[in-house]
Image (cartoon, rainbow, N blue to C red; front, side):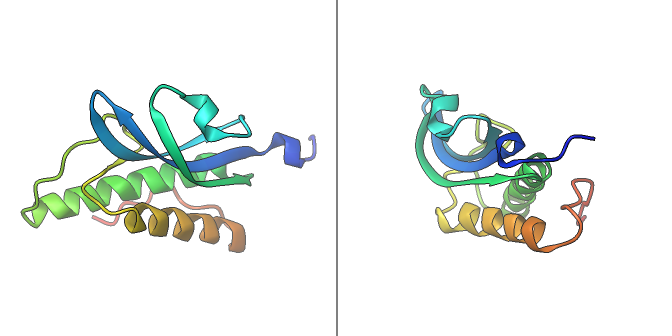
Length: 123
């Protein structure tokens, strides 16, 4: 089995984006050194970019958490605009929300002996 090197790691990122006139927060993974190069048409600003071996699992965990946060806010009676990307979080949430979610999952992946469980559902 080949050893994992820094070159084989993907970059996990958090960006602000706009698509179809709708602003949103977007988590994703890329091989590009600058995440904006992945989608120059829609990505506006990079807020986080980290190389990690668990990028795919962390991306999925962050994206699912974004969905849970939006669904929870809707259940509480808030009108939340749906982002045009499944890995997105509505711009109705301030930047601190996606940053905290991203940082929490990345910290867990980097400090735990187990990668985040993408099948976990709190409901």
